Image (tube, rainbow, N blue to C red; front, top):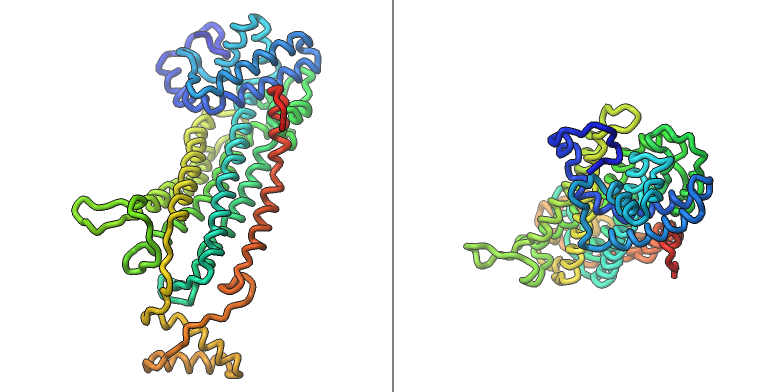
Length: 448
């Protein structure tokens, strides 16, 4: 089948197979967004006189029909069709004849891919934020439920000071706030319109790039057409960094859970159906879910480095190296989403052990409490520190087990409301409603 770029020579089959790679498979993810970009582009072409109004009307109508087709789960590229751009134009040409061939005016596959990728990333970031928010809400719920459950805090994996499960759950909730800030920054970079940059040097047609920006719900343009192309790779790396932030939070939580489930810690437990056993040891309840989350998240944390290395030493302009970025970045969204959902499943069913700190082996956790009490009674800090240290060495240390922490963010004052307010502020800064309305308008749908 003839390619969009084909003239009178046919590529060697081996070259075609190698250069296409996994694009046909990954392009299925881009299919709806390719159609959205084409609807906006066609509408703009009509506004500048490159298409007649009648042509615009019928093209938009058929593109909306194609949108429904490519959004079906069973949709595939036809045999011999190189990519989604070719498939959509082929379907349109079959429906409308020569009018279907006109939609590529004033654009290149380069800016077509760019706008598809940005629309895809925007949609994926939107879905990921919903997952992050749901996990955040669960962590806050657990933080409030278990704020009275004390357990050991560690530094250097050595006993340090009293902590609580309210603090532990709450810490990961607040970590997700910072992750959400990073996701919002990535969304800002993604939500700029590259359409109209063509092959990276613009077009001699009098196109209206501001119009397509508004139609597609972008915040703004990638103004400089050279930078619009240079942004490919940079955008993916920024998004990868945002995913890596969420992965860092999940990975560390998973490591904690593996430790706390260990019999030597024995702080938490899970129903048997959420753990796995051993082929020879009947007593085993292994935290395989958390171990796999940890490993998946470590791979995602490596993703920014992979993207950076794949774009190292590239000059300006488009290069085929950039095609491979999709293979690395696109699957990471599904993996991270699955990890978030599995972590939720586990924590919704976690059991927390009570009265952990009543065990004699944890009594030295309270050494700082005793030092601080002596200081409050007027003893200089260094003298109080030495006195408690001598009592510990002599085996005379004792404490009533009460913890009196009242400052912001401490055991007795978790500040979960303030943390929730920060998350709300980040969530409200996303233009989800406006973007959704723009996309619905392109498809002729109500935004309600």
